[in-house]
Length: 367
View 1 (cartoon, rainbow, N blue to C red):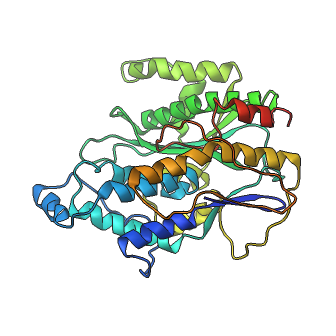
View 2 (view 1 turned 60 degrees about the vertical axis):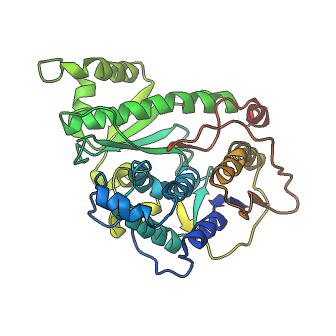
View 3 (view 1 turned 180 degrees about the horizontal axis):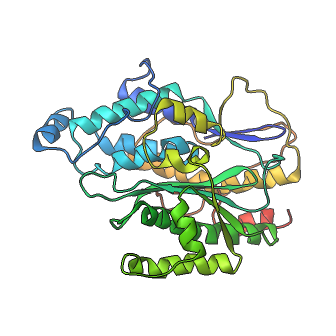
């Protein structure tokens, strides 16, 4: 991973790892495409004929979904839904799934220069944690499960995001949105605790942005009946947190829903529109400047502490040699050094800092 420290932001990228994956696939000179998956594609369980065609290629499907998963979890939230969809077929992939893997890597080829940008001093940022949660409804044709997507910001920095299939079949879009909101609230509990512990401050109530009017109405005034009594416990839990002023739920237009691209494979227009909100920026210049404040240095130490171990663990598991480790780009006056790696369990959830890191706490506690 490359970490570029500028005067007013930090840019994270993984171009070397992308190049290695493209080289393994023989796609170094391929023609890029505009979306991670083919627009409108519906991937189903592979038939025996499809499985046989893929096995003839003698390729390791998991190697390439694993690299994509690592990218999606660290610096590329735009990849998360497609990675989640394709990883569901890790056990028995077919030729159709492999064709989408190739398509995916062509998209990564065309977007390899995108950087995840952290701007903690952005004047538009807020002191409270901001969550955006969204969900599909019964879009999986085989299981009729819905998909949840969420992204969390603090001080205009994306610090956590996820795209995952829900566990149970939902009977309405409102119920699917409620499950996504509940997952976001659970994520918020440890993110908020972590920030308050590290920065030694009490945060304002976290704000959750949703785009389902029925969900907002039920949280404000939920009455159990024959059609909604199965939602009783979860809905009352959410309403209790709202009444205790621990969270606030805000209705926003669907066009402003940032988490929308985390629940489905979007078309090129909507994907490009939301990249800026994800702080995915393409840089043409590598000119670096000194850190602006001690707060920046503390943030980078936290980033290094969390991310250092994950890359080596992934590369070792995939037996990929020759990939460069994390590189720290900063001015000569900066005293940033990599710290001892800590234990990390890989998942589709991406987090910038780790809640159990006592050393990071000591580095950041004074800021």
